[in-house]
Length: 285
Image (cartoon, rainbow, N blue to C red; front, top):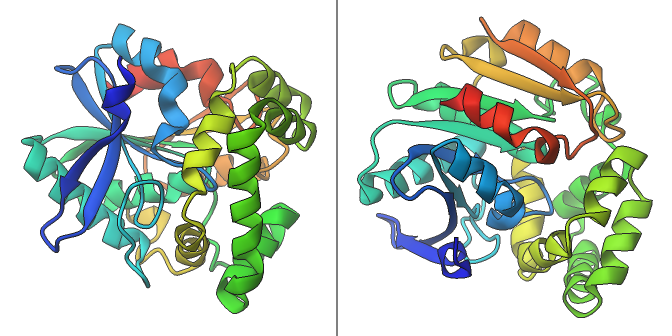
């Protein structure tokens, strides 16, 4: 799909611009992607061929303040569900499935809970439990805990970090990719080494507006507004057997708590979706 399909925009009812990318088959079954943290609409670019083969039209929006989307200070996870419904109304789309990776997992869960009459199925990939529940936040990787607390209490200290990361990704993509791979487990490092610089391209776009990244970290520590037990549509929960960022118990716990959910534990790390897109899309169909 041409790169021009990665820079699409709709104007929401309140006047905010919402940027999105589209991959796969333009007239296929719609799947809405919720990108991860420190990421943006481009984090599923590698799935284009798999989406096309599965007959999926993959729509991947930027959350408010990320990439090309206008900010929405103080937003919640459920606010984003309203934005997606507004966007799809304007695109003439009624029914769809939802997927979310890492930080985006909770946003896929929000779509499943808030829009059960429209969402056919959801996939939570390497997702987290509600961070407001006792003991969960403390189990996050150290960098996520630090970025979250600094974004809450001292955002002026963390914005320069995101600015520097974006600059490095833009000006030295190969070096940026190697450094990122070195901080991950072997399974994820292998994915990044073979991605042809896509991770750096995505990162540069994701962090070009540091204020939006700060707000993304503030939003994910706020209450979901619902519990996993309240989701009533079919959900697939995916976990990587070599994931060194997410607690291995979390996918199992989410699958246990979401009524009727199906757990899929597969070879791979935090980036396991890159290895299993065909199966993920088949389930979402």
